[in-house]
Length: 334
Ligand code: X2X
Picture 1 (cartoon, rainbow, N blue to C red):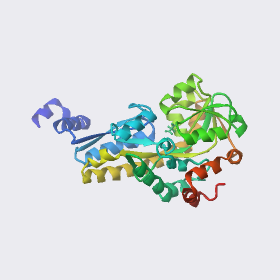
Picture 2: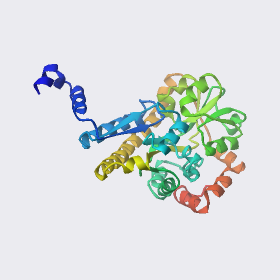
Picture 3: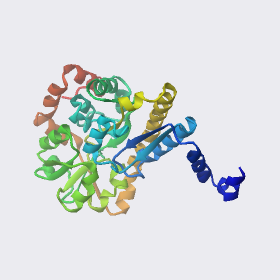
Picture 4: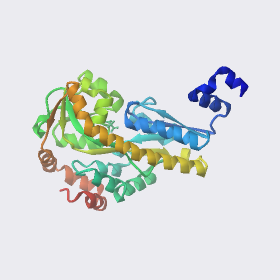
């Protein structure tokens, strides 16, 4: 006590904690990686969660959060999580589709009319179906509560997208996922798969003209600096499964597994509220920063997908049984 008091360290909670951590290193240190800026609610809630886990485990379990694709882009990180070099990762169900194709079903265009449908499906049978598939077909599992990304909107440096024809031939960045490529081909755009880590630069250097993401990402990643037009299309809801490498998790004693599970699912619920509030309020901020917005008629885009055979094709790929589970929550889609 005398020694610490002598340094003045006890006056600062942060320093005192640090001194304690040095005295007794954590028994377990696990890595959690994601692709979003540190200011996005996902990282804000994940940092809070990591602090709560360290406290509740009495310093036994430390989770290190790596934002902004610091450990590699999504494609690289996915292979690291599969191998256990990274322990936790939040990933879109559609990018996970490269490994577990059936996971992409939550991304079906214009499927969920509102958040009541989203959470009923994802916290219900549709989410359970996908989590079973992930656990059966990979070295990873997903925690019960999916984190929110939001409804996706289209942005461009070329022109406002007001109707499907505006997408014709437009070079659109899509995340690396068969489903996204298929959807933007159905719109007759020219999709290019680029990991999020490279999106700002790709837009800035005009490798692509447009991209699509929820407003919370457009704002925190400052994509508005390189994309003057934003079209409110709500063409797809997207989330992030919180994935764990099975062996990394199995190495934890049962009490620590319980603490992690409870805090991950709790943080997901808090993050969902934050993201919804941000996505609902950001248009005003982005307009003030010079971004031009337009609304769209969703039915025109939906008709275009239908005419291109997009729904029929993916219904066939996902199978009648899974499609019926989706439509149980969304109503008939075709
Ligand atoms: O890559 C994207 O666009 C992002 C950040 O939305 C996803 O992780 C799917």
